Length: 255
Image (cartoon, rainbow, N blue to C red; front, side, top):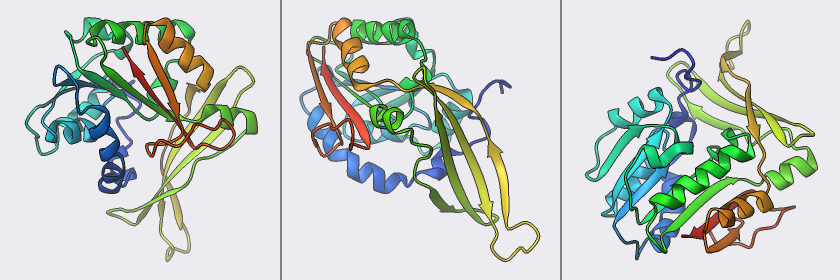
């Protein structure tokens, strides 16, 4: 396994309450992709493949693409769902990784912020547009970096999960920078309340440089790539996007 795979030591699958999350998000994706044609979808930055399997269970052919070999190994080790497949590749050059047309695409979580330059997201959106069918919907979700940058927020909510050797705590610290980047420190802790000598143990910690893309920058990149409709939402519940209050930015764009 490549030594530079920054996700090889972090089990994100265990850090997220996936059944609850998929039940919450599923109706939104069902509505967005109901009329998708062709019935082929892309999951860009698919990670361990939960969303790809969800969409495939709805009758779609889904191709999950990720650059992390360790993430893809976990995706392929999970119980298979007919219609879901996974390939390794750079989503910034997606036209060279998969062959279109696709009837829709998703890109969720902190995937886009890993692209730190305007040239990278221009390449990403342009390549995506080239493999989507005319009118195909694209759903992008990231944190609301307008709020994070403007308020100088330093952390995301804690996640607690039962682990093999004790309670696992997923800590996500942030340090927003003046240039629009965000230093992100995903850290996994083990909590052992009865251990007087070492009640908290650090299992893993990393420093990742992200770009806090603002809503106006994302919308501009979509339109520049040729997406004719771009809607900014504050949640999968279709709340209006509020730069100061929304937790997330959810973009629904159509080719």
